Image (cartoon, rainbow, N blue to C red):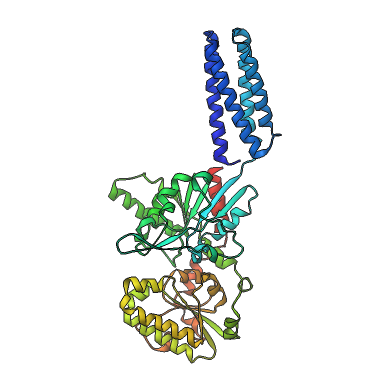
Length: 479
């Protein structure tokens, strides 16, 4: 039985208790017709409760037994409508039996909890996975993973092509088809999401059926867990969105980040004269870490499978993870493409290292939408790199494999940098204005790492248990 179902049954019990008071009053007034009508209503409600409990947990529960005895008392009372004294005694027995039913529903019936996760991109599943792992291991919890569709946003604001990545999730994650999971019917106790934008993303949007402002009406607890992490602190411009507005709880990676969210949200409340409209900020934002850190900390190289072609390329070479981002592309324009060709050309001639190039997802679609005049050259660079096969081109959903399997990070600033810090391996940030090979990873990469010491200090309290802490925290709120 679900918690909300138990609540509904207890509400019916409360209604029956009110009916008993009316029956007692009608008995005193000798209104037998009214008494019989109420008795019939009580009996119908008791039968409905009994059938519901029996359907979920079988006939042998104490609650069902008590309900059968309650119906028998109601029948006896219907035979005594002309005798107020006998009726008064039976009404007392009914009230006592009703308390026994209520107690049994509260303490004897097993309660199951339902938690549903609504990811939309497989590459971002790691922002929820460790919470799901904690939930699915609970014997009294039904944890569902329901990948949802998302759409390209057309210039006129309408929805373009639909995308669905449910078949791209790890094999160990049982996927539920979004077309068969009815939120209103299931009414999950907790919903976890990692997309906060609703209709405010100009490039892509999840289906409007899964906007946060709608989901909050179909659960007791909507939890937003950001799909990105930061090296130090978040930008204030990203703190107020549909996810933070409508979610009951928001999981953030550190106390510093939490304070930024709260401060920015207070400014929003003041500007819009809506203080308290979206809940208590001190309770809404919770600093527990990030499931993305959990994924990196708890992963080992043996956990990942490489294509045979990649294994041959790597051999005994050091692996440089080269990460290029949408933000840097838009800022750099032609200069970025020049830098990109230079880097790929440099690694082509290296014998002791192998380049693992991982462009940020949406790269090409972003070029198409915002830099269409440069798209052909960008695609040509990719085509030449893949054709010549001197390095790895990784456009898969699994970012964590690249982090764990590589030896050095090189590339743009991005959330991936914050994750790479967890490994303790060298990190170098590329300068697109410098085409000299001096900014490339070398044997002295550790010495040249501009953020390594800072990273170790800031991530000292990241222990890989955010998922467990997050699930236990949410569970304690509800149960």
